[in-house]
Length: 202
Image (cartoon, rainbow, N blue to C red; front, side):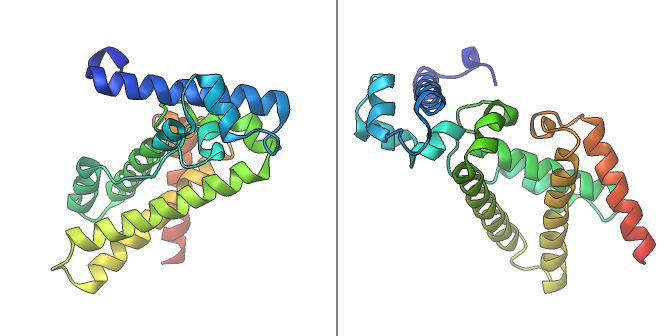
């Protein structure tokens, strides 16, 4: 979504998120992650420490531009209402991408922090924590929407979401920009590989 399409309050929020992230990235590149403090990030961004914690839970999140994941309703319903077949895996991948986009609350691309993630294991650990939280949120959302469905249907939906996450990780090895490019050939190839492999098992 372009900034001009947002309301004033949301524009200001997004600008503050991006300002804090830019400050965090600059300081970490100059001084290192361990040496950089929340107070320094807030000072560089021109806000208070209290304001910092209104936007990010920790300095690692500020570097990543990351926040608590949420499950968008539209792609969730579309996935759950798609009948069994090849398209259902595609909708599960779309759902994972939509949830991943909510984590990147500063609106930055996944590859924008790849250099720092490769350098600092703490950032990889934090990304993994957000991934775990996203999976838990998805599992809970699926259970809520399928509260009256047979247990096998709930388990099947959860399993397919886990498979979709694996498809994305497989595609990421070839195209690190896959989280921001749903039309990536690497993603289509990965989905085909997993469909073919599963078919061979049956």
